[in-house]
Amino acid sequence: MSNTGIPVNASLILDAVLYKGDNSKVIDDPNYLDGSAVYSNYPGMVLLDTKSLGTGVLAGDMVLTIMWDSSGTETFDILVQITKDGGYDYEIMFMHEDTVNDFGTTIINKFDPKSNYRIIIKSISQSEIALDYIKLTPVFPGSMVSATRRVINNSEVIEVVDRGKSTITGNGSRATSKAINFNKLFAETPDVYIGSPSSYLATSAENKTPQGCTCWFNHVDGTGWSETHTFTWLAIGSVKVPYAPALPL
Image (cartoon, rainbow, N blue to C red; front, side):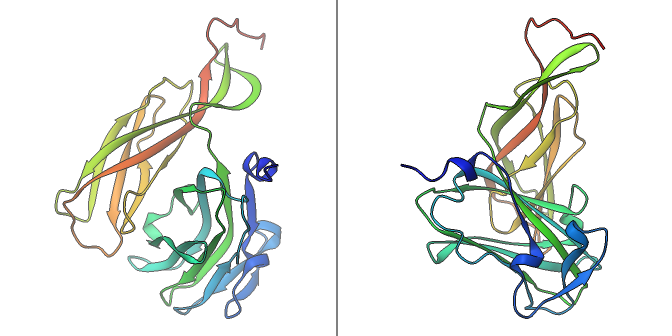
């Protein structure tokens, strides 16, 4: 019998304080989860180390959201590493300007339920860094997020996932953008996640509307790039329920 049912069907929120590395420290601040966060101000400090999460805990497409803050400007402050069965799987650096969603940085990663994964986040600068928590949210492509219906502008809506793939070609500068259209019209602006097509490209979604958004790709070391990559995007939001009458307000 598979043991993946419960973890795969619920978001995992891992408090950085409970998974902090030996050479980092904890600070108290009511603005963070449970009133504390992991702090560093020197490169090489381990902010978070999940150790082995065990077979089946992470499975399928998941959005990894890293909630952190930094005093740095134009410096690369954290290194995120994901290992699979003890070996390298994914690695990317982030600077303060790459953060979105209230200082949250997102990564889309596909996890093999038969493998053991470990997530490590390290400081790579002398900036003051506070890591609050990480969240892993499973995504079921084309599926319903919640069965709870609600009303927006007199129309009944339901939460769904939309996804797609596109290509991006660098223009020789550090930052390059690509406008995309969603496959469906959302009733309101959805949450959008852009998967990084390379370990040296940090991503963000800007100018979001119910119809689409602009995807930005920034080279993590500040240099220009011109390759062509395929990337995945995910949009989670409300769409109108077909032919369903509006509920009374």
